[in-house]
Structure formats: C-alpha cells, structure tokens
Image (cartoon, rainbow, N blue to C red; front, side):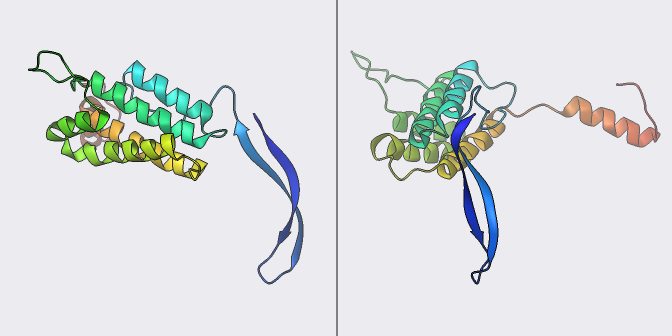
Length: 175
C-alpha cells in the first residue's frame, strides 16, 4: 500500500482543540483490493475489467470508471448482445449505447444500472477531472447490483435442506 501519510490537528465543533490525528490517504494497493466480489458465474472477461478498475481507483478514479465502462462491453458480448449490425452489405460496429438499447428489450430491470455506468464512464473518459474515489465506488456498486441480478445464484437446494431441518427440528442429511 502506498499513499499520503501525515498528522493533522483535530478540532471539535466550536473550536476546541482535540490534539492531533494520523491521516493516511491511500493512493494505490498491490495487489489491488477488489471493488466487490462478483457472482461466481461472472465471465472472466468482465472480471479482468473489474480488476483493472480496482488497480487504478485510488490513484486515478476516472480511469477506474473507464474500466468499469469497458466491462459493459465485455458483459454485453458475453450475454450475446451483437457488437455489429446485421442485414447490411458491410456490418457496422454498434456503439455501446446501441448495444444497451438492444439489451434493454431483454432485461429492462438491469438496463438503467448499466446505462448509468456508461454515462458516467463517458464523463470520466472525456471530462474526468471532478470524479472522486467515492464516485467510482458508487458506480462500482451499480455494476455489483447488475451482476447480482444477471448471475443469480440458485439457492434452491440449500433452501430445501434448511426447510427439512426446520421440519425435523434437528440436523438431517441433505436431501
């Protein structure tokens, strides 16, 4: 871990001096701490982009958000959303927004989360200066929720086992 370290004087509201506090502002961590733990079924190509975001978030939050935006491209490809238009003589590459529009028909419940990542990713890529670590963490949370909705874990077996234990009021073998 590397960062800015120092001490600062602490004040209470009203001006009372509380002494000094130690301050550490993280700039980078190696290995990177994941932004979140994606569902087990999350494709490797998406995980790679998430790891890139985690590696840059403390040092360059706009770059981290750009990596999160990039993960959308990988995700849509993994979900089978076309990257090129069909029905023309020469296939034309679809923009991320066009691909998200196609995906909205399949999963409208997840689409706003993904589109929000895209819009903030565009800002981070082109404007970027005002993006903070907090902003990047919030955008990562959108992706975390979206992946959780897309790659729902099937808990039916463990739920059945719990129900059997409750009925028997003791440990029973897994059905």
